[in-house]
Image 1 (cartoon, rainbow, N blue to C red):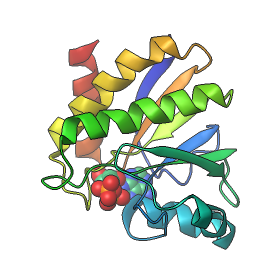
Image 2 (image 1 turned 180 degrees about the vertical axis):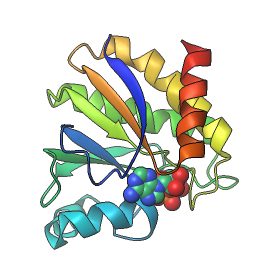
Image 3 (image 1 turned 90 degrees about the vertical axis):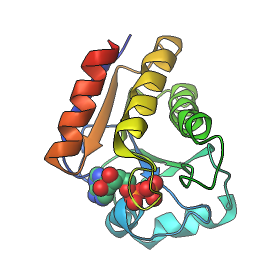
Image 4 (image 1 turned 90 degrees about the horizontal axis):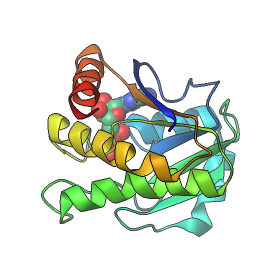
Length: 170
Ligand code: ADP
């Protein structure tokens, strides 16, 4: 099974990773947080490629090129808005599972995730981390081509939370 690592950093600066995952909105437009950072770094070609793929549903994952980003692809996932899209845990798990399976089908060897739904979408961070890591641990054995899964967290607290959660689940 591939390795799972949790690092502090910017999802838009993961040059050694095949696909970075976007915490997308349904319209696959730029915005705040992760989507803003990725679209800014990718340039307008990313929004253009996204337009015909939108809208997407909670739990869904779609793939595009990476344009100005230092990766091969962006995988766009729509996480659940906490308290609105139900069942939240199943929809959040579907994001991670669908993104990994899509990466596997595309022959990618490495993928980096942000903490989907844990920002503007309001998912409590500890619960989001548990769903995220449990789903990756469950799905990765079925994705033999994926050698590395990296969680990229914006701040030190979130990084420590993901590291603790991973150790508790392993
Ligand atoms: P969502 O709308 O799915 O909640 P957000 O982009 O608002 O997504 O936030 C998801 C998580 O990503 C939050 O924990 C936020 O702090 C973090 N985040 C924001 N910008 C970045 C970035 N450039 N790289 C990595 N993580 C980021």
